Image 1 (cartoon, rainbow, N blue to C red):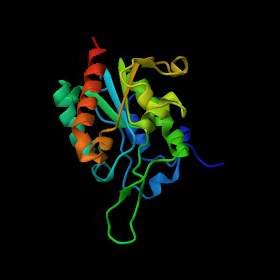
Image 2 (image 1 turned 90 degrees about the vertical axis):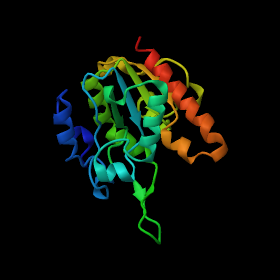
Image 3 (image 1 turned 180 degrees about the horizontal axis):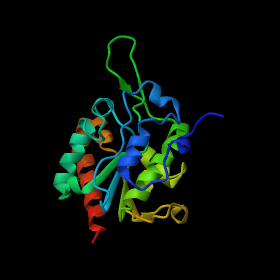
Image 4 (image 1 turned 90 degrees about the horizontal axis):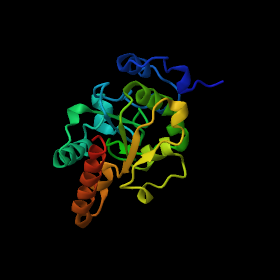
Length: 213
């Protein structure tokens, strides 16, 4: 029987121990091509936790989440929203970079994780959620949202709402959930739409921070 992430996740709420164990995870095949596991970062006492899709090219090389172009845009949005990134815990639904290589050139092109890969990596995300136990959980992008809210969840229908996880009783945590677009979608959007998309992200971040009271 093939190994799953459950075989590698330790019974621990210590983020350092979880991150160390994640470096050895072979719960899906993404580890074969990625440079390294990219675990979450931030204080275990964070009251706001942000979850994106997966590490990108620069995150894969650096071993840290949200340090590439999308991370820089997120930093800009956090400043505009008056939110201190150092007080956040940031992570991704999938811990390895999934990419394709063009026939010519060496630039690795981001590829969206499959549903199977997202589900395979979910035990790590649940372990992080259990370790941090934030008051507010912000899911950035459809992949992150569907990883915890279910495959039928539609992000655009629920922006600006205060939600709850469908299986919070099993998780031992019940944060208020907010959803928003992933910062990378702002970067990929049409130039004439980017300012509006950025302001919408800032608005969602302010909404999430406001739920902390």
